[in-house]
Length: 415
Image 1 (cartoon, one colour):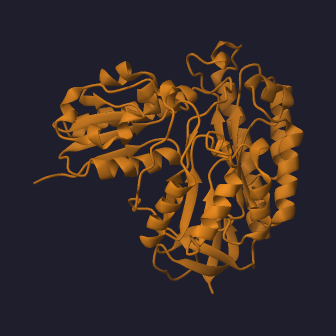
Image 2: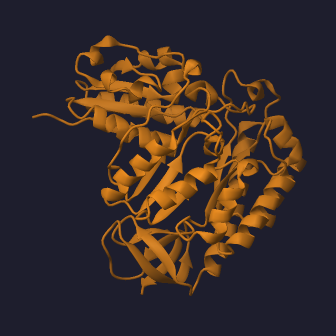
Image 3: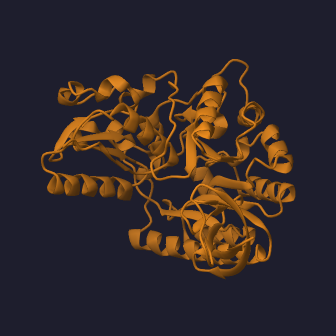
């Protein structure tokens, strides 16, 4: 009996989208395991290696195909793992020709990602097990933050044209998806390589006009200094544009930000947060923060911790700093690993405090929740919500009133 391909996805929302592209391309293959790796941290790579070893142990006859950023950056390392039949680069994994039965026996196919000049659009109509759909609008990154290896896994920034994005979103809405998340590596750089150099806000505005049946549009992580005026206008006045921002913050200390080679300072982010909350007072805000960046003293860490507390950021993604070979930060004086972990724990605790305060402020209000299971989902503000009683069909948007706060978010009753 044939066995459809199994896909193990690590890392970002862009990888989630690309895994669905591969699912479509590989649908005719039998007994194949696809591992879509991430290279953001050493831990992400360790988890992928562990998954490959487990897969080979559990299914020794299956052919394992490894792809993603880690495979793009160091293909030989992944090729050497037991059970790996093929390693594909980030461009090759999205090419249907890579997924024929004959191609599986061809070994490594990893081209120079830095030579990529365009992003080929793909049409995805289903995300396995998900009620929220992701749409790739941009690939790659032209910036060189000192801690980040991802530009060498993804290549230069390149944009998906408006027409292709609209076609993809229409197809997803026709398949029943009520919420779409625009994703990429550096989505606020969208349009820089297109005629006229349009901004991300223009793409969002045109999407909402051209696909009027789309109920909810959300953005993945954005660069604080690249939020354009069209995005601000949408946040303020367009109810289908979700009241949530996830900021690529990384630190709350100007000295650390400069050493990271970020393009914003603390005051810039504070201004963005203040303007966003003025637009939508109930706005949910997330942020990526790195704990224990090289040279980060106790005093510099305290600046980040204090900034997180002052701003009340409820949805923090905290990462202990992870050396990425070949990056400038990997050559800087390191903070002990134990200190990185301890600082990360303190930042997460501050985020949990902010989340509880934010969720408490939502009690008694009417929230519209996209259900991801029969009893749980996320509000427009991306607050996690669990139904206190009863259930409804996953994929529906239901009006609820939060009645309590617990460690996981809000508990609510259906209206």
